[in-house]
Length: 363
Ligand code: NDP
Ligand code: MG
Image 1 (tube, rainbow, N blue to C red):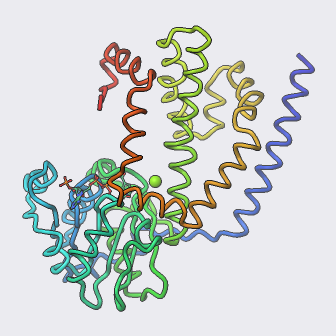
Image 2 (image 1 turned 135 degrees about the horizontal axis):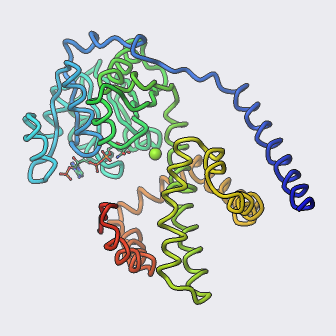
Image 3 (image 1 turned 135 degrees about the vertical axis):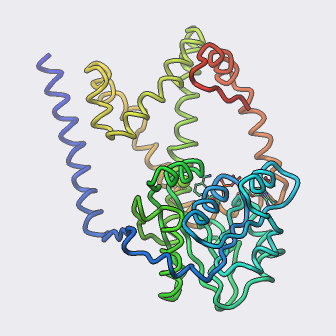
């Protein structure tokens, strides 16, 4: 017992030193600016038209919040889809992307990132006028030059840190999802104030709006989704599931232990970080965490993370994804088909039928 504790103390000590070091580095480098309701003036949008192009996850939420904040909103949404009907049912009269761009003073492009470049060139760019503010909720296309705004057009990013349905439901409750704001290089003070007013209109300044840059938003967003949120977590779960199944354990058990229960842990992270998760789980689980976790994510894993980050920073990832789209997503669709058939998906689909409360979504 004593030996165990001593070993644990050593591990904790070296971990916390590292953590302290990086925290100090961060706090000296970064003077974070956060804007709240009082820092933004909605009346600046009074005589302006805001064009929301795309009525999907973000579009439907931002358009409705802005309208409820008293702004004049026009929706650009192609006909023939459920999103078009949704916009109509919400009381909008959707027009084409080109018409919306022509009528908007602020034009927010809320289309999937991989189609924004083409729609911008064909429909939006020819309709831009000097003094318009071109907007987005993710910097990929501007940062990686798929959207090159003409002279005299400033760009602003207002990115809610949550999915559209949350942006809408929090706003309706009187709250707001914290958001990021960024301005293109050399953007005017007027553009900054308009972007802040926009952020207030969607409810962002109720939660707090953090200032960033197009580069930082784009690169950290891609890194997070590749290394942790989508890529890292999926690979970890699959490898653990396969390890148990290959060792002869029942796939159902492997599913529960390696995928299903992840939600409980993530909910604890969400509410109180690693500390709260470790406070809530058993001491046995906590000890296993400290002593085994670092054997899974090793120095080699971290070196690979750095490589992935440099591919993002150099534009290598962006170029690959843009070319993949030009090739009609040939490789992307092939790997998607293969992934969909993974045994963890097959067993998961069956098990979720036993848990009516989870509101299973099978695609
Ligand atoms: P969605 O996929 O939910 O919606 C996309 C919209 O674009 C739909 O209205 C869709 O209409 C339309 N659309 C799709 N393809 C085309 C096309 N070829 N031509 C014209 N219209 C098209 O997108 P999101 O709301 O998720 O994403 C929008 C932006 O917001 C992205 O930049 C994203 O990175 C960013 N963002 C998204 C977040 C999220 O949680 N979803 C969070 C923060 C930022 P149709 O129904 O006709 O296909
Ligand atoms: Mg993200």
